[in-house]
Image (cartoon, protein in one colour):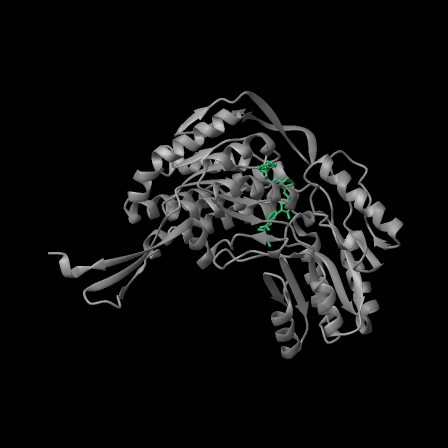
Length: 477
Ligand SMILES: NC(=O)c1ccc[n+]([C@@H]2O[C@H](COP(=O)([O-])OP(=O)(O)OC[C@H]3O[C@@H](n4cnc5c(N)ncnc54)[C@H](O)[C@@H]3O)[C@@H](O)[C@H]2O)c1
Ligand SMILES: O=C[C@H](O)CS(=O)(=O)O
């Protein structure tokens, strides 16, 4: 099936069609997706610019209704879209359907924003003067998304951007265009006016620059290197830029922890969604008093994970997204062994078609090893031993990435100390480092994030500009 770009409310052929295949079965071609040219990306920006004034002036109730209807459509089609997502990205069907439902919830939540996004009126300090503080849409927003959450990420950027009156051009990952295409289709079914949402598909190296050169703001989620390129290109234009980047997320297990709970939390954080989450647990820092007892539990659980067909209900972990990513993961496993890390279990490619590997767990690692410095972005986790809470926090914070972090403890004071002293943008207490709620701010610090947080009460900051108006009533009327 051929899927085209969406520009100005029309479906537009690109310069070629690119097949998209199933990571669990590379012979299964999902569809052929149009690849836009840089000129077409510029046309999409122009279409969004033409639609911007009317959309910004559209009654908030109308904007809200369109977002709510989009959420309704996502809910109604959650099972078939979840299956498409699984076929495209490889997470299990349960996770795929869950991601579509989460996307529906995001649209439903954002549907309230046009009605909530008010300002305030204050008395001025001079006679007859009132000060009106308000927020206005930024204008045309370029949204660039990665492959690991192919529905939820486009949803959480698009829904908020449009809620506040912006028009958008979305460029999804060329690895996973199918979900973004379906989202475009549902938005138009929900009654979105032409040009408010535009979709251009294809390689970021060709289309990204056209978006950065034309939009009024760029919200990007992806790898640190690409984020840096986008930032460098956007600086001369002084546009707003938001970068949500990689993680190297630590989970600290203290000596008073419930070790069964800790092992469950570690497995979920490290290996669910095949470890392909920016918030995935990759460094598990364990108090030396409970090290062996915890590792025994974690190894048993990791060995017990059923890796296989992501459509099968019994599967716990699906394939890696593509061959390149699989080879990258296996390369890190091999390098960690040469660094002296001991492979406690897993780490091998499965002898079957598709990009499958066993989840890999290393013990005897230290925080200086490359396996504990670089983001792997796959099912690979390492145990590091720590002497006490202070030592564990020091190791946890010793990373350029600071996206998510977690602690497992029964002590309120230890939990509170960790919450205060962790450098990460997200802190989880007795919960996995991955798995965020859609109604609260999300984002990292350091090399993990730049330009403000996303979602919940934070979204308005990036997708609007502030205005402070001084009104002298003395001369009016
Ligand atoms: N912090 C977060 O919220 C978060 C969430 C999910 C994923 N991620 C990160 O995403 C990365 C994995 O995703 P990926 O491999 O798709 O990342 P990526 O950086 O390779 O690609 C992300 C997007 O950028 C586009 N792109 C590539 N080159 C570009 C350029 N020069 N200019 C503009 N756009 C360009 C790609 O086509 C894609 O749409 C990981 O590092 C992961 O941590 C971060
Ligand atoms: O990669 C982004 C994810 O949505 C974050 S999480 O898996 O929900 O933690």
